[in-house]
Amino acid sequence: MDWLRSLLLPVEGTLYARKVDDLYLFITFVSAFFFLLVTGLLAVFILRYRRRRPDEVTPHITENFKLEVVWTVIPLLLVMFIFFWGFHGYMEATVAPADAMEIQVTAKRWLWEFEYPNGTRTINEIHVPVGKPVKLVMSSDDVIHSFFVPSFRLKTDVLPNRYTELWFTPTREGMHTIFCAEYCGRGHSDMSGKIWVDSEAQYQDWLERGDESAQSMPLAELGAVLYQSRGCATCHSLDGTRGQGPSLKAIFGEQHRMTDGKVFLVDENYLRNSILQPQSEIREGYQGIMPTFQGVLRDREILALIEFIKAQN
Ligand code: CUA
Image 1 (cartoon, rainbow, N blue to C red):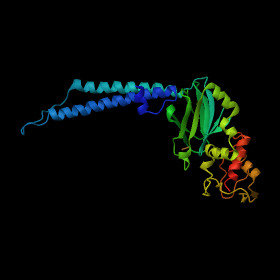
Image 2 (image 1 turned 90 degrees about the vertical axis):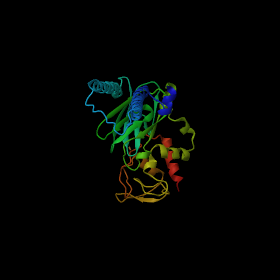
Image 3 (image 1 turned 135 degrees about the horizontal axis):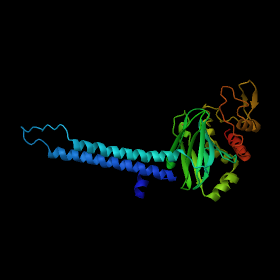
Image 4 (image 1 turned 60 degrees about the horizontal axis):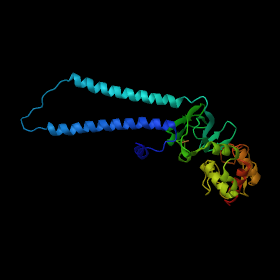
């Protein structure tokens, strides 16, 4: 049966995914069975009871009590069975175990922000240990988004001014993709992220040191990676087109006017301040919608982004 699962459905990343698939396949096969039964009988009846003589008349049948009971009771039992099976799974998905690790999730146009119990913050990427229950407590800063992980078979809306929850026990190490499944504006299709399911040792290592590869990468190259992974790309273009925020094309060394009339030279300090305290100075003609990256980016990552912006000249 496993070959059939892998043919029909995406990989299973959680225990829960298997249960969803069991029910899903059951409904599919029951539907297929009745489809074949009904169309098969239809074909047989067409052939067997076709009109053979021109004067043949169809007998008038008004009711068949036994047959009606059978075709009412069997489907009723079947759908009730499916209902209780689904309800059982729904309850399980709704109530997280008490010992689950909690991660706070904030959705904003158009990125996912995560905060760990120890204060570690990440954008568009989380690491979780394999085999341990994880609970996500989610809310939105702006419009309705929806947190969807196909390989976990989980999807929950993320709303402003309210918390929604989702929990899972990952069983499969490796990368799983997060999508936003609620249309939330121009950057909706870019609003994806990654869940890395690590072994316990890898996970502890990541918590302490961050990404290994990031430490050895040259600054401008790391900046290019961060520009994509931290969500800068959804608002700041590189080719001069206007987005929610100003383009980063050849801005280094320019003079920019702010909404309060002040003029700033775009240098390293200005860029650093704009990343860490985006609300302090807002460029003329734009709105102050950028989230702060204070505590999200390490010092070296800020340097890397500045180098990346310089490289756009
Ligand atoms: Cu967020 Cu679509």
